Amino acid sequence: LKRTDRRAPPAIRATPRRPPLDLMADQCLPIDGSLGSVITGSIVWTCASLLIVKKVFHESPDRRWRDLVLDTSKQAIGGAWAGLISPPAVGCDAYLGGLLAETTVGTLVTYLCLVAFARLFERGIDNSKALRTGEYGNGSRHFVPGIYLSQVILWVASITAMKWAVPLFTPPFVAFGSIILEVFWWSGFLELSITALFAPCAMFGLQVWITDDFLKKAGKIGIFWHSARQALPRSII
Image (cartoon, rainbow, N blue to C red; front, side, top):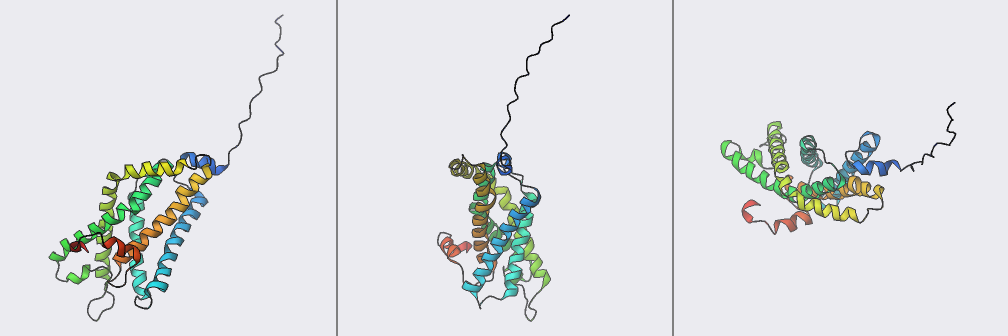
């Protein structure tokens, strides 16, 4: 008869359970489900709140609410388009670096493209005022849909050109983002929170504030755009 081995099987070492957000931090973004919706809603709420604060405390009563809504709608359409054509980021470093590049260098590139496209196309149309950003009327008519649509098309074209150009400037920002996240290597939750929530709220908020200054009708400008204009040639302002 064969002898039966009665030795106890080796103990299976239990793997400690990690918090769900730490597990997400390994893959970082995109975050799907209800949590992703909450984060996206927080970013949109932050940007919208900043524009309202800007209107109430910095521009009122010179700027009408209707003009603010129309200007903001162009940003919203451009943001939605940018999200559709953006490749998915893999890893927190890549996402944070792309965010920093797009909201800094990308904002400048978008402005330069908008100026270039407007000056290019205004030569081929009879009503050159139609491409003056922030002006949506024509004579006695306070709102002309065709003028608004023309400005939306120019803005979307500028966003598309920016999306093509920004990857050329992204690698240094990815390295900088990696340095920032290295400080929080001990907590995946903090890395994810900074990458997915805090940094986007801050940087997209700054971007929409500056972008609103050059998308709106000529008038009182904010301190950020005023500072940026000092470094730009007068020929493109």
